[in-house]
Amino acid sequence: MAEDGGNAAEQPASDPNPCPICLAPVTEESYLDQCFHKFCYNCILRWTKVVKSKQSRAPASVKCPLCKTENFSIIRSYGGRFFQQHYVNENLDNSMFFTKAHKYRFQCYYTNEGGLFDKFNVPRYWKLCKYLQPNPWLISWLRREIQAVTQEEDVDIIVHHILGVIDSFRRNEPKQIKDAPQTKQEEFKIMVSEAARPFLTGRTDRFVNELELFLASSLTIDAFDSVYIQHLGWKTTEKIEEGEIGEPVEQGPLVPYLYFFDEDSDGNE
Image (tube, rainbow, N blue to C red; front, side, top):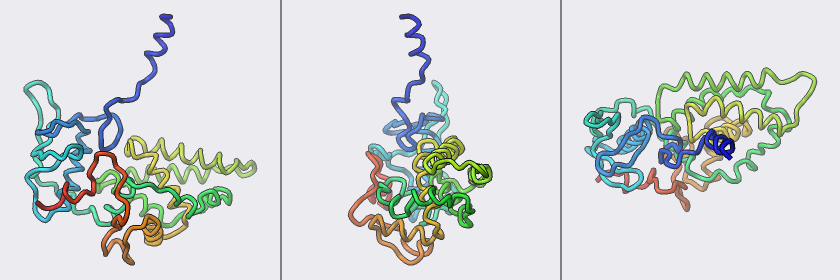
């Protein structure tokens, strides 16, 4: 009995209280100063950047993404009488890079992509070994995608790391023995997931699905965006980067409790 108990204790338990934003275990535990909801420091800091980028003037407070209470600062490194405090109205200069196209892609991570795998015929992509063909738009798509997910501008190291894994997967294809398409698909998704997870944490699995959709589409970035947002039933213009991003017509982002695109949470007061 004692031996069984020891084995059970060795198995890692899932975190019962993950970060509400990235859905992964909390790193650099941080709190909002009024409601005291807990987040990863980088996650809640990026949240404030997105909110600030959508307002014409710098706000003095930010609403909690969980309870919508107004908060004025983020508290981290708390240890008894000592802590660090980051005020919402402090200058955050790197929010300017986050374009409307980034916001559209960020919003996609909170919608159901059902039907897109059929629209882009993902099984055919693997059956015809189209993964062996280089994609000229991949590096640009990866950069924008990772910037949108992490809400950080400097993502070149992550981009080239994941790109290297994809190139390695393509180069190491056996010359004689061919694996079943489902086997290659699974191998690809495992390799990319392992490469991306340290950076994308709780968004990794969805990122891998989005990457597979883009590669299977064989479309340019603009064409992929157009098909994607039309399928979701969003309003669109000819060029997302220069016009309005997709806006939900009949459906909203499927994010329990988080008001990422709620006008009341981040609009001007």
